Image 1 (cartoon, one colour):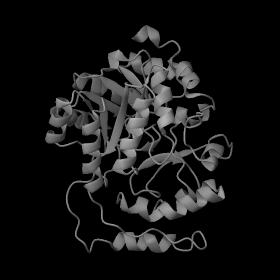
Image 2 (image 1 turned 135 degrees about the vertical axis):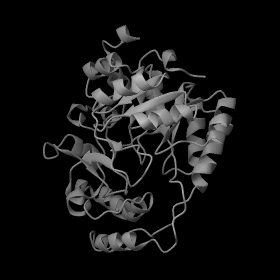
Image 3 (image 1 turned 90 degrees about the vertical axis):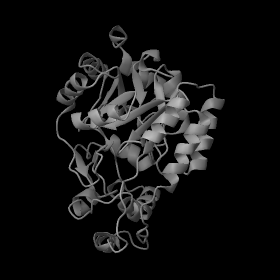
Length: 345
């Protein structure tokens, strides 16, 4: 089983679903001494299997995969009112582009992706938005796979350890992208990472990854000093040569007009941090707490806006340290972030 102590560099490439995390980015971060983590969300199980094979074909053996845990419980079929109202607001926002259909949330692709990572023996599997079942944990452990759960509170960290997680990934409110709350409707905790991390360190006796607002090597060293065994970085890699970040997304990250990050449900129905833009300003107050349905509704609009190069109609996930992001090879970015961190290992 891969442990955080096996990493030559205490850096984990956070899984960024929807395009930024490519096979090449996973490979590059792992080759640089850290560990790249594949984002399986929004990929078919077959695509995930192909990516795992490509990463292995590149000679990389130290890598992970991340899964979004589907919401538990069954919604009544008639519970579509909030989604219908939101769909009406999205109509005509981009001329000629219709919102997506209201599709019921399901677990089929999650279940199939679990089978893919099990069959492939992916060495490090992380879960976001909830706990994997005890059966899935047992089956992963039988394959000598490390089980990782992403949390935003001490209570969720306790729950992760009770479910036999090998590693807890502590995500602060400063992090870009989706907050890993276990309840889609819950407002995420606001406890800053520099307070949350020591609290989790005191509460559980497993290795910890910490992420949120990392801008430079000083931040990495600070989090290691606070009790992390490794540091997860996502926003810092968005401009990497190997990242699949779209052209308008890349441009926004370096545009002085985009200076503020906000928490929003506007794009996906789940709370996520990104650069403030027009879509958030117009729609955040109206978005229902429904995932992945809202994400499906806004998908056609986001894709059309990306093709048109319009950063105001796409999700620009970014953490509070986004202004420090720089272009270049991922290996150079990892090296810069880990400078001075060797002494903490």
